[in-house]
Image (cartoon, rainbow, N blue to C red; front, side, top):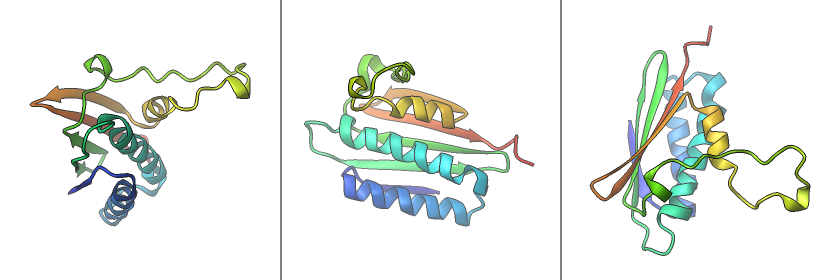
Length: 140
């Protein structure tokens, strides 16, 4: 199952909704649907906001493989590489941080790491490849 769309905020929202509906129709366990949608939205919004920051947006390509016990998602774009060519750490702010001292962003990678079973990133042929895996083996 695959999908591509221009890397704009509006088209990204449409793409996330379309892919979520397709995955549900193909048997994505209901108990994992929200986790997948949230992680997918965070990852794709990072592509739109950061990979294409300051350059003309191109396409975002998403390829999915929904198996009996897992979902594998590959997100490909031709935007700028991740800083230091690796995934950001995504550590949450300490719990004693005052509300006014919280950073505006930076929580997305922590959230993705909490929701996905595995995350990998690679820069290949002037493009970014991000793999997200969601395991279902703990489901009844």
